[in-house]
Length: 229
Image (tube, rainbow, N blue to C red; front, side, top):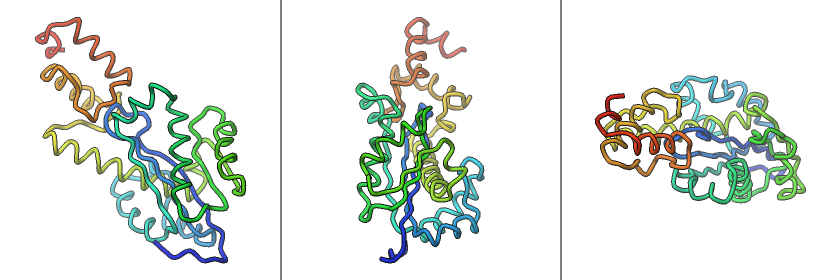
């Protein structure tokens, strides 16, 4: 992490990884860099984490980290997500945490670029404008494809989430897949684990429809039938 020059503009990008999965945390990252170094992110090949292979993301991670001025990260656990969803939508949860990540920085960036979660990107950015009235706020869908600082944030968030998923799989001794509801490995793990233990492990988001439907299905079937599907 490099020293911040007093004469340079600080630019930040904010993104998340793991918004949709039923397993594991949502990881949010705010990544700040001096504006005159932004081009170096592009030169090193930083782009939307979904467009990079896991190996490439991991190789870029330390370089992105070294070039940064400030980085703040939040891991929101499955239990925290379930609890917060009792009061807020997932969009609002993201918004509140992203704002906190910027507030946790020692220096408030002059420009803040956000990967908007709301269908209305401008509306999503309003809370940031109120929180940081002196900063330029850009809230855009798929911002990780257009702004290198957001791409950098997406890579950090994705790598950290992948590391958590890998550790969870090793700890439980089973293949839990990517954690996404559509992943066959994840679906198989959830089904067999619940059938055996009559509950989900603590890293499962029980407020997700995937978990709710499995619970309901289990309650209407015998264990033998459940395991046989």
